[in-house]
Length: 287
Image (cartoon, rainbow, N blue to C red; front, side, top):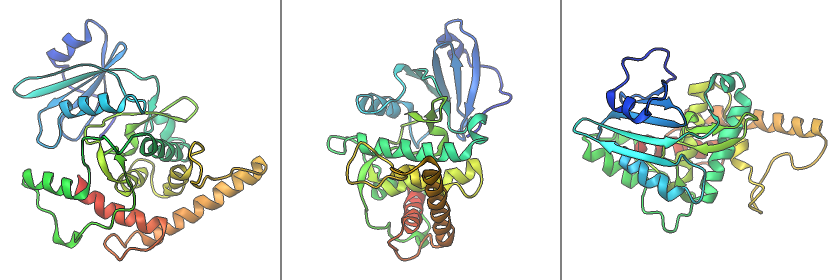
């Protein structure tokens, strides 16, 4: 997925949906789809594919909207080759916008905070979709994808949540201050182990910002002032002490993750990084 510099002609359907507003391509995905900005809406347009559909995303956006901030659905359509989805624009920027690429610590932590909030607020009870390893394996098999047997069985479930399903960095929107304000691209949302989402997000900090940002991300996933009993970071002390704590914790998290990076299929170990490793193994079953 990339921010486009040049694109081809704008499809006629997109021009029609834009209603005369200026159309600008803002995102390209790996399946040949493009997202456009036109006035106060975003328009996703792309070829039909067997992995997921925009119709699936419409259902999930509608279901999630009472609980978390997601784009409001304006219109959806499909023809023999393509489909499109129009949503109301949310003011904010992707966590991989140039501003945040230049401030990776802020962005990485915000991604973690946003993902934690999504997991906490979406209700497992009543969610009609699954995103567990068994379901994803079956979906892959239907598409003719056969998993490498070296993956073995997925790790034991640590905690069931409603997962985003594609929790990579670009799918978190940030405010001007660097706070997470919304999530996009929820076409795979469903109940699964939280560590599969965490693993994808942690890996994507390296893809988008370079190595070493798992620490700030992991600190973000721990922070939730609205839920007693969960650990938070830097809740007391002077600003200098809090910054020192954050820096120390960040280094520690990064060290643990780097130490365990090669243990993607190793035995479970009761460490955050081992859970990342297990989540990576589970997440590989996901995609």
